Image 1: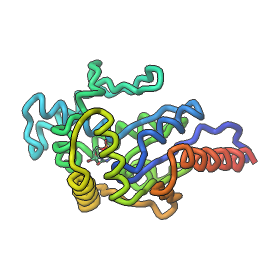
Image 2: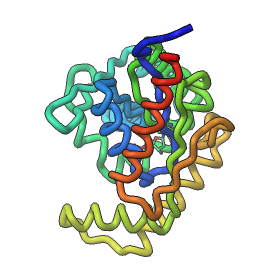
Image 3: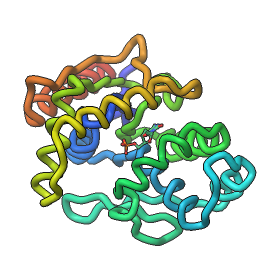
Image 4: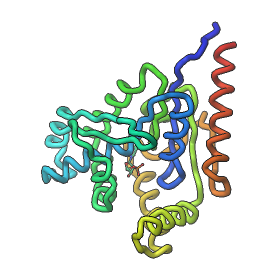
Length: 231
Ligand code: DC
């Protein structure tokens, strides 16, 4: 059957620093799709938990927190703001304290279950790019296209270091690379929905590629999929 202009579900998984955020935003923009940054969703719950002094191991309190949560992504020019219960938390969820807290919150089963439901609700109708760690394996195993973006830890550390330097934040390069490796280990070792490559994912190693190069590859693959579905 021919499906003209089917609104696709596109999953982009991979470790931190592989360029997922930039690329998923750019890809969504290219096709007029909604971009769902699932890491920002885990960061948002972590922020609320921190503000309300909830222990990351207190499942009951986290469950209540999730039940009463609204998360929206709002496009403002080139940037995408994150609103939690109507409040703009775009900057507040990116502090080092939240980056440290989020792996513990993201490992909590009640939080993952709540996010799973929310992400499926947001993405079910298609026309979405979802960026995360478990999109192609757990959230949307039936996604139309699954990308797995990777790059060596040293390269991802160097990118993070350059980003921080640009913001005027002075850090040590080796320390930054070590932090990237530690985060990989935490995301991969977790028993529930770990960072994992789906068997049918298209792997793109961006170590030697520019963002533009990777975007071009992705756009070509999405267009080929659309053409295939249109018969
Ligand atoms: O992509 P990010 O760095 O903003 O992700 C923040 C944290 O959330 C990171 O520790 C991994 C976790 N995460 C997750 O467990 N599952 C996802 N689908 C997305 C992010």
